[in-house]
Length: 193
Image (cartoon, rainbow, N blue to C red; front, side, top):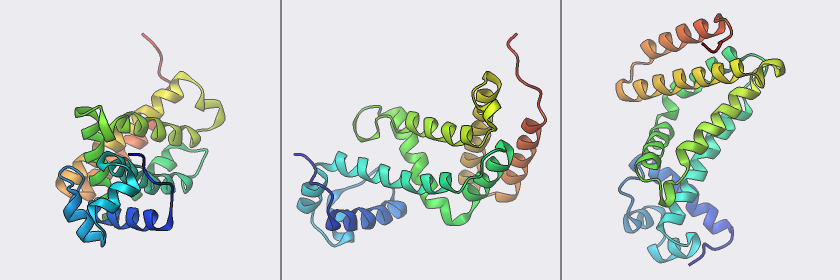
């Protein structure tokens, strides 16, 4: 069955389902408890989203909207400054639920590369690298060294995020991120051996 076209009711239920999965995760998502929590029925959810996989895909797209909002607020021209602002957003306690959901979806897309998770990790990497590229000066953006710097920044942010979500230690992870960003900002251009 194909998902119904966008409608106010679909959007309303998508937002309610998104709030639900922020609290409960996607891993063991069951339509009955979800439908009860959002004031609907499994049948209506299946009609509006086509299938449970269709609903999960819609929820993953919705989660990405929060990330894209961050992307729109990131300054351009200074990769280190942009990465620092991104880290501040990632480290904010108010964003833990969406980031935990992101980690779950990222991992599931690696473990279960088919189905609703398909491509989530790859697309996420591509989106974040594009964001970081837009924060670089135009002359650095299209160089091998520029690509290596934004990849290194992404690795620092992702690694620190996983650590933060596991430990809750904002001070330590923030200090580590700031240290690494300063080191990357002062690094010489990368050369091939």
